[in-house]
Image 1 (cartoon, one colour):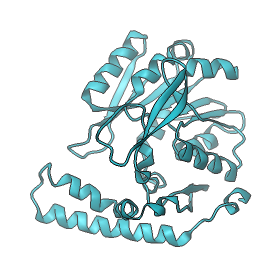
Image 2 (cartoon, rainbow, N blue to C red):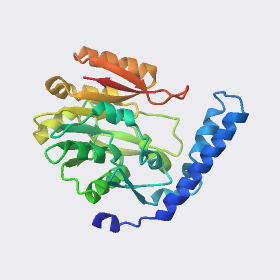
Image 3 (cartoon, rainbow, N blue to C red):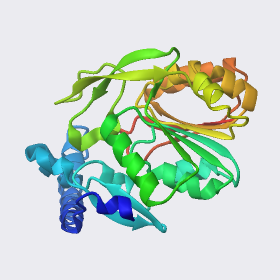
Image 4 (cartoon, rainbow, N blue to C red):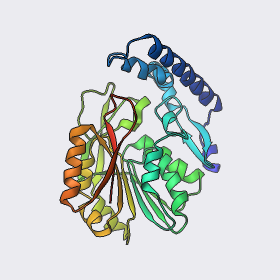
Length: 290
């Protein structure tokens, strides 16, 4: 826990953020009950469900506040007034963990590790003889990822501050407003408000695996906010050589179809794809292949 003591951890902030989220759920229920279910209403529901993020939108300094909680026996440092609050939940992406199904001594690659919620869990599952490569290009997310590694004493996690692509070099990372740092992407977009561009180093997964001398890869999780096809092209040798389990987030029907075609051309078997949520306007899938 010495690493956590180096930072100012506010328990009150998490209490306040949770209270705002509870109030948001009540308001969202009221809106759902008394207003017609139209597409125009859904953005309003999304906003009230995340009142903690709304508050930080008007008070940006809140996005620098840190809190900590224990989840399944692990310590997790996070930013309570950002979308981190969704990630430190017992209900955060259980389908991803179910599909990855890590075993002892495996090597798992977490591409788009963010603050390390899945990374920490994977580390426990693969055990001391296993390895987790945690890839995250955004500096602030990477800092918290490293902190979560340290406070949990995870010697089997290798953090890598890179954006994975089809070719090495540099790229422009589109960093959204601080309350939604989980949406950082190398895909250009006009939809993100208060976004900024940051130059990041890029590498291919094939080169990373080769440089580290990795002799097996059992599973790969890819969550890169729409840039998945570029990542896959730079991982072709790794996928063909090791035939790992793949759990990939796809954004939109076109992205999902292109991803499936790309994987099939590499001889990969598409096992299933599952919607990220039951919401009718949800456009994300988790694709499982092997």
